[in-house]
Image (cartoon, rainbow, N blue to C red):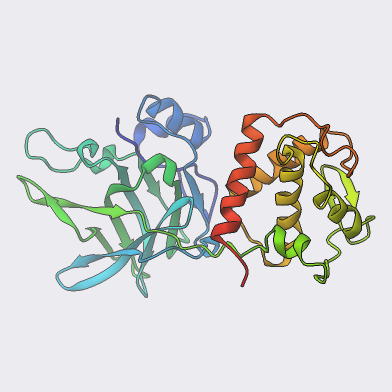
Length: 326
């Protein structure tokens, strides 16, 4: 199934609607018209036109292609990704603005082409963007990585205009379409993001060393930490961790959960984490909130946690093992 980039458009720099006649003969908002005309298996959501200035830091190496006539470049297309999205930016070089864009992003085999000579049918590309004065110098589109996967193809034809209304309509650099050898396309590969998730001190640091001072994570609230909706001082939490578990069949699930969550909370100044880690923190903390307030006297009497909770506890432990503070 082809996955094709569809832009959700908003009014920006007095830009016009698409030049496609089938999308102009209606008062329906443009985003809705796209859905009406392109609804089907190829249509996916979450395409967003974004301000070029809002693009975050991108991972690895970005792909840059020029729009060339002979050896002169009139503009560029830059493609990169952060941890969750691809960003496509088309820019005019100094003195040149964007007049229109015809863009496809998705499976190579699904690029619209003429069945006879193989020429790309740019007027059938799903992104059809026309601009009116004042034409922008750059335009950007965000597409979730989940929609395009680890690699995809782009085919793009752009018209550039200068102050004298001279127009250059060009394809980007790339491989041509056989057998006509017209148009162009190029591939993009997702770049790996190396993200600093910070670090955490483990249970031994916070509970095993009697001389380790605790930060007051709670601020204005009572105690030093809040776990499962309950406030605990350093002394109360350490009493739970050091409680004699001789009457328990192993280490109680509640004690394990409490220790892992509290260790990450106490390491707050050093922890960045990731989305999944914080989701696991919420899973475990919500289960602890369903229990009676923990104490040395009742630590053995709490019920076993559901398997999903203990799986989250295990992942938190793995995260701390992988991100220890020195």
